[in-house]
Image 1 (cartoon, rainbow, N blue to C red):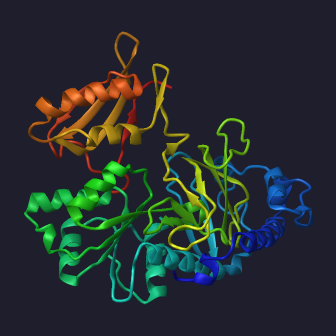
Image 2: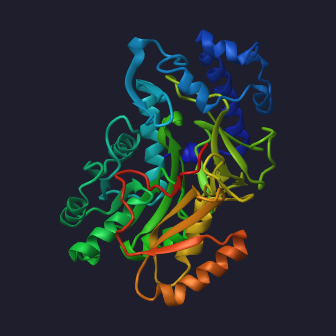
Image 3: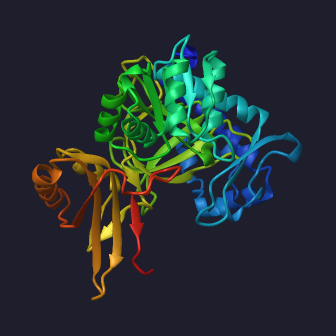
Length: 423
């Protein structure tokens, strides 16, 4: 562990620390008049137990967008050292101002994530997420430097160069968005690059939903162990939590973040073990503290007990999907990750696919599944895929089989769903 005194803190003491930080966070939020208005009469002294936190109102993404740029910021301008923000593709971007304390906190939780994934002295970390307004690259950089690891901060793109540097500089740890290793594998095949020449041992992957089946492909092709790391612009970037070597759930650093799982419709708290929407509160962020932020991510609490790794912080299940990326077709609800697992289970199937929804000329909706595949898929994989989709999801999509490389490769996250139906 990076900080064993905190990471293995007994549950009773951890909950006391959380309550203290809840009060500090509420007091900080109340320094902003707009934030105070939305919190109503709630005061730090009203928090007698952690359960009292559940009486505070939820914070939504729309509210953060409407507050652009600094409407809910809780640090004075002279204290802000850095700005990061979301893409703003569906409205105003969410601006997250960082104080010096926020940058320090980010480095701390990212260092914990590296150690949990097995990073050690002498490792060389290749950072492939972008450096800029997107949070990814900087978080990985800060955590690695905190541990004294060697950093190759190449950023996004230039996949051929990425592979060359991985080999020549002896990279042992890969930091990436979840689907980028697939691009590395593709380019290596196209260019005859020997993946066996790499020394990669660990991959820390996040920013996208990815299935266990996709993890198996990445681990087999790159000969490493892949760990799911979570976080988002709103919470301060990657570092909210990560899997450990036990791979029995994602540890959330509870001294910095409070997690609740609620019913996506009613907002009522779900019992441990029951799936629902993740709600996150930050307990130590200064620039933009979050109080009960609805993430839209679907997960469940696996355990609050001590893990085999010795850490006491709660473990969440890997995210299954998002409440806002659920696909509804002819009354059937499903998530792209479900189709991903079904596709990858078939012989000859590739790892790239796209779900296309459109309105047919006759007025009915059409579900088209585009799947890249290799030799033998049509004869041996396609019949099984049709049968498994019908059995698991009660759907019979049209399936178009494409050659490898026919689907576009966006520079960032993979585009899994294209909905062309009129709104």
